[in-house]
Image 1 (cartoon, rainbow, N blue to C red):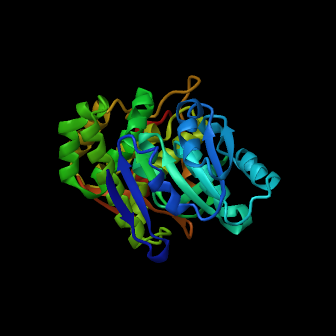
Image 2 (cartoon, rainbow, N blue to C red):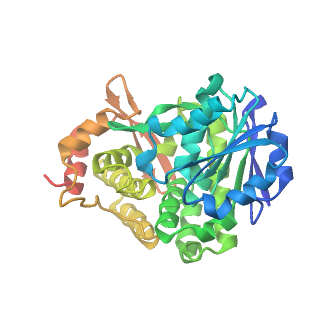
Length: 364
């Protein structure tokens, strides 16, 4: 087992990464402050892992909330069953919420923890690759709005993260690939060497080789932990973690939540960011081709999909991106590339070239 640390002073917390560590009582007990626990999971994960997690809390006053599975349920109304459970059982400020599942469960549980009694503790137990390498770390919690993804939320850090790579054996191939998009993101923003490693080890990752997966998860979590420690609330460099996300969130929202998985939308968004970077003259076309090749080798899409016989229009993209969280003082900020493993945040790009990129990816 590997242990990483997110250094946030008195709010620092560990990330435990290992095989078959879900039953390790010593990993959770130091991070449960009282005797009250609510485990939040979904109807897909519950039959697989809920009983194992329940044994960790057999000596606690423990309740379970099982949510429906899917991004479509990641709404303000969707968290009410969690709040109802807390209220009905008169749980106090010492209660600990446990998020058992993927990114949707983690985001919703974390947000419920952030707002119940103005903030209670929670633990992340991510069971998807995307959640293990990205969404479970860093304290971003929230829900979607019909006009924008993750627009309702709070920064609320977990007490610990337990990433058991064994859970990835029950993950379907499409979800595994969606997680690989976030892994590739870390290579693009910060490490050409990791990009090279990924090109050589993609087959092992897709085959769920435990050594390769553990290394990819560890690298990704360490990179994110370092960035979060330096910029917890995204005042600066943490925004680099949004490479491809402004385009990707527009795709997710515009096509309807769940029709395009988050990792799939981010994959397309990273290609679009690379395309704009090429048009600006900041990277060579060969770099964009290398990125597309790696994404395709991970079985990820590189084009905006057609849903119900249509794609997003340029006007829809413009409208959705204008409502993005990275719009400041009316100016859209994008994460773009200077090279493989070198990214930067800017609003100083040619707006006409942005339209050219959108035109290349959408139906006029």
